Image 1 (cartoon, rainbow, N blue to C red):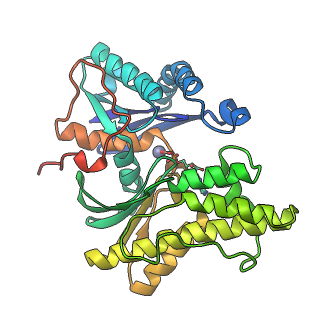
Image 2: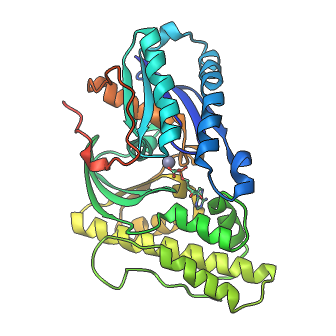
Image 3: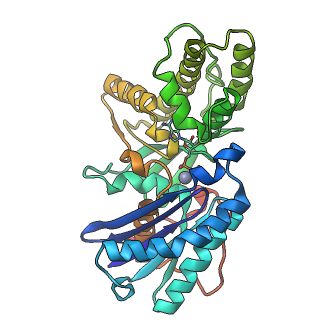
Length: 339
Ligand code: KG4
Ligand code: ZN
């Protein structure tokens, strides 16, 4: 069985074809970075319009790349939420319509379930159960995962998501959008120990997180120091270290609370080298394991949507003819996969 996945929830158009026996057959990605860079962040209306332009050509490219035609496809999966409503509507409308035209099922997919399952596309996928640390631009949460669709949220950010904190802090530092990867490259040149940032909400029990205060701390640190390149790198280092440390402390607690030793990180910030390293150190200490997707599948992509869509299609979760999206959609409302 083959499925085509369509991702348009934010600023990336991602298309992929997944075969349940052969794996990933093709994946195509168009990033809108150049479109939004002058505005310092994603402009939703521009994002939607660009998805309209790019989705069909990328679908054609994916089919050609996999040497397939529409007749070889058994289902169309599209991100139905959470995300920007207009951007989601583009993928949902195109996905639903293609499924109708091709007379095959349409499968709505939860974007964060896509991220959570992205490591399943790797050669050594994580076995269930595990703790998932989902860290993207829109969400930061710790989820106890017993199986596909068996998700219990253990904690989440009460304000900014980790990726959002990276992006907003980068903007404060005068770095371009998308700030996360740029700030983390700057941090590589930073000196450890010059600045010490707080680890928010680690001094009290619980698994919720807060990252918005780190922006203010960064702004104050910038104001109180010279603005030379090394100082900026040192500030970037201290910020990144604070975010990673906080996430590691919360992961450690989640593992202890559930008695688990296996952790999966996914979502854009799971591409962060320091975060991966810190979690690997934690796993080594406790005799546990860390899994994450290859770098290109940490950020938004069609492959994770095709994979998650395949699981949902096999579970008979198909859409009716109405085109519906859910800009807000809690992950723990998903149904467990039967069997
Ligand atoms: O998962 P994603 O592509 O989109 C959402 O679902 O939001 O995540 C994008 C986020 C952005 O905030 C971006 O700055 C952040 O992931 N990001 C990073 C890195 N790569 C992407 N943050 C820190 N370090 C990175 N290397
Ligand atoms: Zn995402």
